[in-house]
Length: 411
Image 1 (tube, rainbow, N blue to C red):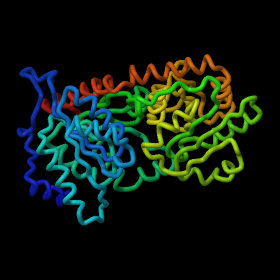
Image 2: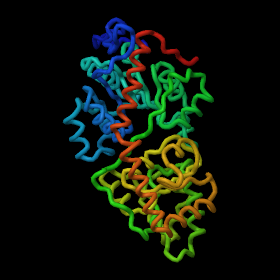
Image 3: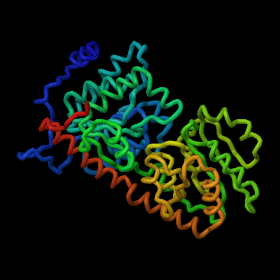
Image 4: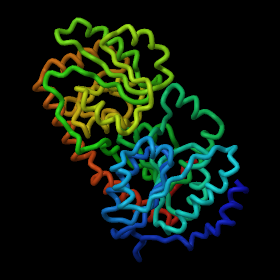
């Protein structure tokens, strides 16, 4: 830490709290005017870009993105929109052993400092090139951190979170943030139940709808194509879905499945997938340009998760008016309203999952009802205008707490 503190001093950065720019009135309350908002996200590029666009309608916004993540996740149209609305910079990923890491950290801090933000909003990331600039900036700027996965998913994610540096980085960032955001009230309650953290520091803001809203098409009324999308890891429950698909083998109209994504869990089921002609496997990273065609080909998006926090896949499904059949775990019940925008089933229950798939795919009226419900959530509760307003309220709380030195920290 001393080395990076030296980097901060050499970059001309002060940690004097008197230097902070605050949006506070004479009574210590946060004012409702524009805030200068700095956003840092080296992952979740589409999420943060859509939030930045919505915030930029009322506030000056600086957006720092990881260049590799932005190239993979952003459509050119979205990249152009956010570049026109915000000040945007792209930061290359640096490993701890890279000689240029310290220079990248100093450059990141210098760009944020030059913007003079009232608040810093970060998307939790446990890499070295993310942690160090945030650690420096947090000492002088009120900070909000979104925890997309407050508890690491089972499998590789949990293994990584148990490593030394990720454990240290997570503990420090979560402790130092003035406010923490999670996606859904259930996740907030679960986090508070196992963490010694004042409830006022943790706020629920839903995950906004992702994808290209201009490409929406209602599912075919007699469609029966399931989509299993994204990382294929242990927690995603692919085996449960394959068991359910076996139970649907004799349906009058064949049920097809698209598996789109890569991950360690595929190896376990590769032979089983290869011998089933109803399954189409796209074993690769799915680029942004491929997302829309995949969702438009599908009738229903299936999330048979064994454990979960939020789900960007459910947020994508809403944008494309696709119903979701999901396990009732973690924050998924906050994302998928049972009987309105999808169906919730018990986890690890292929019989219940098969029954839900059969019900949706065999009933055109019910399918249309769920599709309409999914679309209504995308333009309503999950719209970025609503997400930006809720997030801005958290920013004001963080600014007020830092000004009064009244934001308690977890032990």
